[in-house]
Amino acid sequence: MDAIEVIVAKRDGGELSAAQIDWVIDAYVRGEVADEQMSALAMAILLNGMNRREIAGWTQAMIRSGERMDWSELDRPTADKHSTGGVGDKITLPLAPLVAACGAYVPQLSGRGLGHTGGTLDKLESIPGWRASLSNDEMLGVLRAAGAVICAAGSGLAPADKKLYALRDVTGTVESIPLIASSIMSKKIAEGTGSLVLDVKVGSGAFMKTPERARELAETMVALGTDAGVRTVALLTAMDRPLGRAVGNALEVEESVEVLAGGGPSDVVELTVRLAREMLEAAGVSGKDPADALRDGSAMDAWRTMVGAQGGDPDALLPRAAETMTVDAPESGVLTRLDAYAVGLAAWRLGAGRARKEDPVSAGAGITLHAKPGDLVRAGQPLLTLHADETSRFERALEALRGGYEVGPAAGETLPLIIDRITA
Ligand code: URA
Image (cartoon, rainbow, N blue to C red):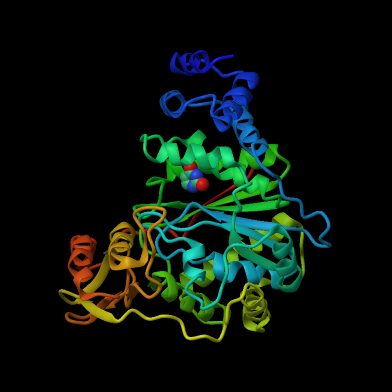
């Protein structure tokens, strides 16, 4: 077999055979298929698509390129959640210990942020001492102690995806639903979870800008999980405005701890509890209700154990940025719009995110929201507080926010927090 034959087949709108898919992924990892050939194939896939059989084969080939984790020695079912990413999306932080407190194990492999969306590991790394890199034995130890573990995926998990994702990033081929779905699901299936809940974000701050595209991605991923024997369900949720009132690493940890203490913003609490119920149902665990576990402190206990078992001090003061600046309401009325992308871009420019994989992030940088769409505001009242380590960052953040919020006479249109639920 050779690469040109596979590229030409997809370029001409054909269906790739199982043998072609297995060969091209394996040969790419071995270096026999060159980056420029894989770029051409990725572009042909972006333009001509893949059917369900091809996507399943592609995903399985990427799983086979690395190790597959196994939690069968644990005495309770495992459940995991994956979010396609958004602004202020810190849900994994309260969710993992919450689900653990209700009786399922949560082995959660997470990533770092790139661009305007934050990464779960960056957020947790703002806790002094907390470690993202664990061996498989350490992961098992944290799971046994706390019921949940959140850590970095090792280099052995779906290495074909790592190589291909980096290539897609620089060849304009990220936005292909078959390639996104197989990329996400190869890692989640290789992680060995028994059940999976997908939070597919919709809106300006998300990968998928419209409910139609998000639904297509969700349906593709649910089919892939189901075909691989993982009980999989997806929610489509709003990302036209930021989630919660905190955007930025340490700021989001603080907000997550508020949720675990029984408080926190209502949208974060509602989504956390809903996703927890979905995870428990998918795992077949019926015991304590997540809302009760937030009230009675058991979710907080699991959080403290989990953070401590990964070297973090759950009582430590979190880093704060040295400089702050407020953005005030230009007039009195209703906050009709607070655009998720504008807020995410501003937080990124304040130092909360990175442009390249190897860049550092600021733990304290970010944005606190004092009002959400639909709230009444008075002229001159603070709408946002910007946090940065240097005042020189404020100007470009303000530029990002220009046109990103509006105060008017009546409430504007916003997406419902939970838009739809997709099952197999
Ligand atoms: N996240 C992934 O892991 N892969 C993609 O292709 C897109 C988002």
